[in-house]
Image 1 (cartoon, rainbow, N blue to C red):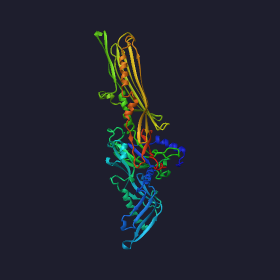
Image 2: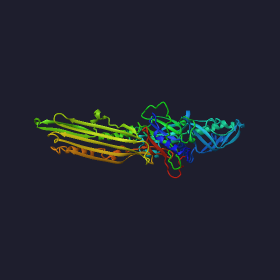
Image 3: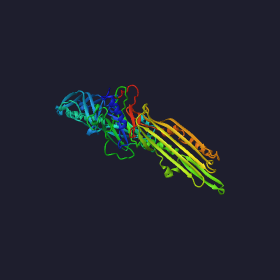
Length: 566
């Protein structure tokens, strides 16, 4: 086992990620484990010439050659503080070995001194900032992944060293304290030389953007979701961050001490969109957004992106699928009869059309064609749309009516199925019933025609290696069934009506369900990350609240990449 939790506890925690996670009043969350951040830092450290590999500070050069600090570094690490300090990130510079040169005394009589450091830790409080990049500063490989960078705002999550301060040694009181041994006389020079190194960490690269060693990853969101409809949300208009504990038992929610060595503590970006006001309170711990592997054979993922039910399921997915409701609604245009020639003959007119037109939508009866939540149980959320439109002329001796009945439903599962997929089921039907009774004694003049179009399909949420969330249609079927209860007196009177209804169903947008769904979801929402180890969406599903959970993993890019973080 790689983690000190038993299998029963592991299964419980994995289930609670679906049943108990809550986004609260926020629109979006991006959650990254401390394990993933440190894995990324380890990869960045491996880059040849990285400032994270070595300290070599000689601020005065040959003018003061004995005033210096050099050190070989192990990969830096991050500790996410919990409890009352849950908005503090501690960045640790881990020294393998080093040498400090300084002067004792001042002026010509100053004596050069030298002191060696063994394995040490310099702990810095840093801010995890969120910054925007101008289009012309976006790296080429990110522009290629985004296809059309004009429609995106590129955000990067980065270490902001501008306010970094060294956490002093506190005699073991603070587990995030610095840990080094140096003589009291050398402390002032040591702190000044460390500040020089921090100055190098703060410097931007030649283009003016934050240097690579600052950046954890990029995130891409659409600037305007109403214009660029391939992305479900717009760029965050408000952002905050906090740390959350990995919770095994209830007491862990408020404890300042991280469980499992803190590897699974979570950095959470709290995002609001569309200028929504951010809540005053931070996110409260509910359940774990990420899970460690139970053993060497179980899967591991490094983060989660969560979109609220209002943002994705209801604001994006269902609002797009509502076009099927619009296209499958039957509108009765005319249904009447009248006597002519002094009552010796009858004249009638009955017909309708499929799909709501602009004129139809001016009628308040047709304006709401959205799905409504009708059931939530058995790990399923069911949304339905029903619309019945009828015109009935039942005056006098005879009767003419037509009625169109549209019913569509979508079932949203909770979590993943046995194939680790999120498969949503879509079903629907539109039935048109036409009735005529214009002549004859008893039943011989009555006739009824029914034409019904039934459709179903599956929508699958899936992730692919280039980091996109895909929505694909599977197993689509459409059938048309007709029946005519013929009149003895007028056996063929509704043949034209039947043929007209069947033709409308065959040429409607939803008859070819697969093509219709692919048109709706032809785009994707891409997550693009820097430093050569991109995150990609491995799986996506819905939790019990109806929020979308996108499971993030590191992408392997060939030999030479480090192993996945443990």
